[in-house]
Length: 129
Image (cartoon, rainbow, N blue to C red; front, top):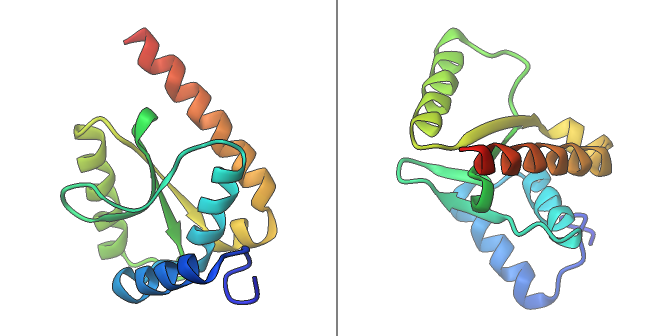
């Protein structure tokens, strides 16, 4: 609880420690991942999309969630990279959203509810197609 803000047993804490070391996973992504699991959403943490690792993926509705930790001074190169990554996701049928870590830190439950709304909208679009 002290390290990541979520209750983890020893085994799961070791797994998360390893994930953070290997992927530089933001703590906000871990908190959001567990908050989504609690309400019955089945997210995947650090999912490989074929090109890069995505912080959180909800594959049933093809939703990728990236947690932004460095957004104060976005350079034009970073903005272009973000746009290209989003384009590749769309070309593969995925929607990518980017959430600043401070939103999760201060508004975790509201963020979860917004993601649930996005999931519901994506489910409707999948049925229409």
